[in-house]
Image 1 (cartoon, rainbow over the protein chains, first blue to last red):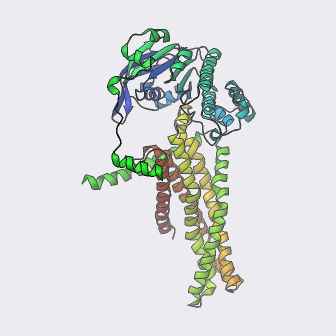
Image 2: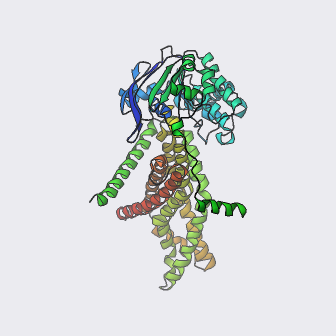
Image 3: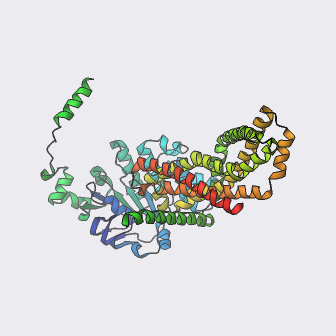
Length: 273
Length: 257
């Protein structure tokens, strides 16, 4: 793996979707060689931030420096070259549905090297073994559970031994045991590749407790907190406390909307039918 | 004024995007790795898997043409020309057009749906972040495979259609076999066969460009999101391909005659 320090620095970033800014004047530093978890409520801009870091969305303003290079002012060609150093685990794995797990994992090597088929398969199997899926190498993604797809996605992300790994909600929708396995896998990756900068977008506080070395909390497209998980736990900030203690905001409480009588009657007729 | 101009501008914009999409797919021929295997796989998907339907449609087209032409021409005592009429109709028009339409329905719609699903489930984004050009990976092999398979399937359609015509005109209605086949031999020229292959190749480019473009841009559709967008993209791809095939057929025929 490249020994360069792959820290990520975000400066005054504005970004979002067609006419709707999700991130405004957002700044943060994700230190090199650490696991940074990005936390926040749904819709606060976590996935938008990830898409901006991956170059899948263009920022409306500001700068993103990865490994000291500004990706916002790079040519397409230069950025594509830099992106070869990224491994990405998408929310549902985003495995190519027409390829088997082994073919999916080997895909970056197939497309970018001239290695013979035998070596490619061996590399894929070795990486699948790392995530505990060697026996499922010839299965298609549609034949596997969500957790297995995520692990296979992780295998594909690390097959090129990238210095920067991005994970979008690696434990969402998983049962506690599979989620813990996923967390352990990320820690194992970290043990294998200590210089790897890992960015994990998550909702899962248990995951943060388990894997995070650096935590970033987003609120309404801005940084609400940046620091270690110990500092986060000790924080007395009202919003952070609510977030960590899983308490909802009274002002957001909704009275249960009473059903219209005609709707009730229709439902009762349907239930009695 | 805006209401009139907006759809026209939108159409021109879409056609421009489609042309750039095609250009990128062609350009990727020189950049895609391990293209041969992918093209071979698509030759199987587009070509071999469409064979049965092409055989069936070709046979029945020949049968019905033979039947109709026999009765129409017997009114003038010109049954001897049936072979020429049938072969020229098939080679110049029916085979390339019907083959393209049938492949659109069978393989084109499937590729729009497949690419559309890949688009809405982050698979295209995954390709991009792996520095794999999605157009080169998904479109270029299909484009090259179709340029090979469309003319081949068109030839098969023509041969089977001529055989169908023989069955209905000679076997069922008693037309002399010699007159039927000598009519074909004396009227069909290399120019007709070349024209047939040219049409097939042009239709291949149209079908693949339209079907892949619609799938690739399924997420940008304003008439639906998610699965609905993929469904709508598939419908648009089939309709637009068929319309463009017929329009291109008219233009090509004008130049080839």
